[in-house]
Picture 1 (cartoon, rainbow, N blue to C red):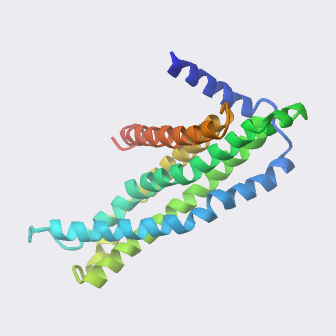
Picture 2: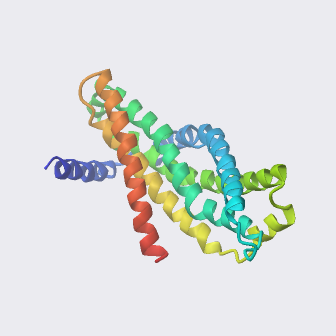
Picture 3: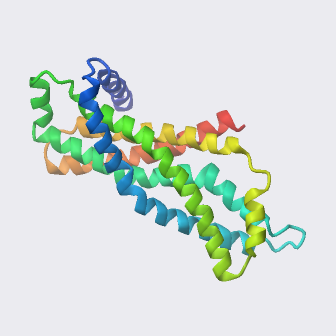
Length: 246
């Protein structure tokens, strides 16, 4: 029953965002600030994780290709498709669920327990629209760029690892990157990224908005936001893959 109650309250929460929207001029500066908070500040960790993911995929693929009948350029193909289809959109969004999701839940949860949200509502401001919509728009817009950067950095990290370790010549790696490239894979990754960005922001703001109590409850809301976002990212990863690629 608690699941049904929370699910119903979640959809009422989403509906309230658009019930009484503020003027666009109010959102414009807030969206820009949220894009910096969500995207620019995450660029470092995204790049670091991506370069090592590409490097690890390269090394592991090379040492598992023990069959001489398998051409070496397959390594570049595996790194490319692994980063584009799965690792960049899914792993990076799981990382952002921990970094961005916990921050959003803590921020809004703190505003709730310190009665700042109540003050907004007393002033006649749609608190859900004012607090949640800019974060959601910013995340949906900026996270695809982070994922695209992750793809390039991951493939580059694979090339660096292969070059430094000497396990695969650059010509073979580049040939694999170019071999039978399907642009739709990038489109599929962008679809997943947008869905995951919505899940992270909506769930994190929902958990923070309905926080009750004090600092301890804010921490618990932040934890729930990360856990629920991560689980739903994995579930929707399977659903989208089944619907689009199967």
